[in-house]
Length: 238
Image (cartoon, rainbow, N blue to C red; front, side, top):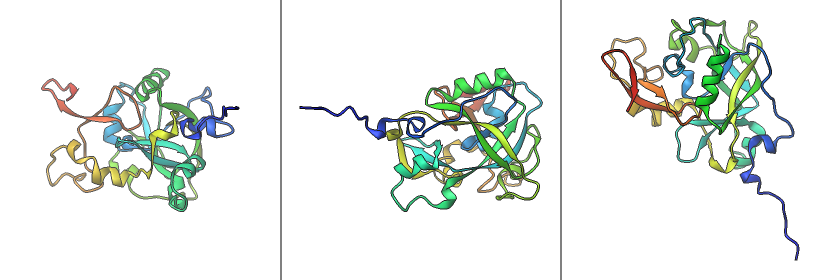
């Protein structure tokens, strides 16, 4: 009898399924965030850095798709060709093959090392080509609507930018055949993490609420936990 040594495709990573992958290269590249970290307040709290030079801009990443991870509420970024092997035929729409996110630039080497550690072994920092939707703005003072609202498509002033993105690098059988959306995250999973804020607050709306969140220790894009703020201003995970 002969046995087959052909591996199960479901146990492969997206990089094993693709003929080639982009590897991080030297250079001052921004980072593309596509999950819960799209919100400026979450980024400011999640990135533990004193770097005052961080800037943010809304952006789109084409030919990629966000998928749910089984039994989790955060997302995995994979090439759309890989997503088409997971999502039932006919269910992956054209709009699902472009990811609306944000670019953050100005990270130091130490900042990137912290991000690598936080994202964990299931994610790999790869280079991608993103299209900006507006000019970069200071992360320290930007309003959420400036990066999460309009525009949603490129303009004549848009530019293609080489950036880092934390893409899924674990077996694809851990992924759900359901496309992850930021709007769905707000509607279904964020309520236990929302902070009580005054009704008059300009960010007190369905799409632009503020969060009391901190990046969790187990890695992953958008893995965030409810937190409390101590009297001395230190944020602690519950």
